Length: 263
Ligand code: SAH
Image (cartoon, rainbow, N blue to C red; front, side):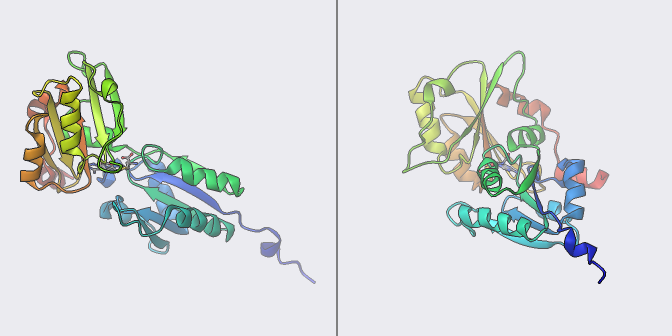
């Protein structure tokens, strides 16, 4: 009897944890694009933009894993189990996450499950929101005259209060970038002033950074909560606090309509 070679060599499934960047598909890495075109199945989050999904092979299965605030479509354990199952079926799986998977993306948790289950994996970094969104807003995160240090923190509130290390956030000559800080913004501004920041310290909130719907609202710790409420900003928003925000006026360059016309 002739051996069926295909059955003797099982396909080895693998999970690629891929960063999709902040939204503009032009910010995908080459490796991300190649994997999106070759994968059997893509498991993607809410933050992954439509433009990025256009690079997915038409034959690939797409599974939406959700992760909108307070309405996780699949629970984290379900996502972990799904990745293990798909790889176990011999599939090439792209786990696609907004920004960079290792920055506030639970990428580490998902990989720990894969490692414990003996599933092979690779990580493809993406442009994280701090980097991509600040670039498209024309706000350099460091600048020799203003900031020699940059902190990335999560503003996600637990029981209505942000459990942040306030003394380290209010230091001078640094930029603070807050992920997931929209609903906690009034509390964050209040706490920073209470811990010694000047009420005049500049702050920007950027909605949909790098996308055609990008909006940048600037102000100070004293007036920002009101300005953001007036502007009706919606998630995802990135908050940038520090003297570098003043440069936005001079360095803002991104005009979605014009950039699209040139492309
Ligand atoms: N892993 C992602 C972050 C996930 S946490 C990364 O590296 O970027 C989700 C938060 O990221 C959002 O609440 C928001 O603060 C920020 N964010 C992601 N994409 C954004 C965008 N296009 N514009 C503004 N903020 C964004």
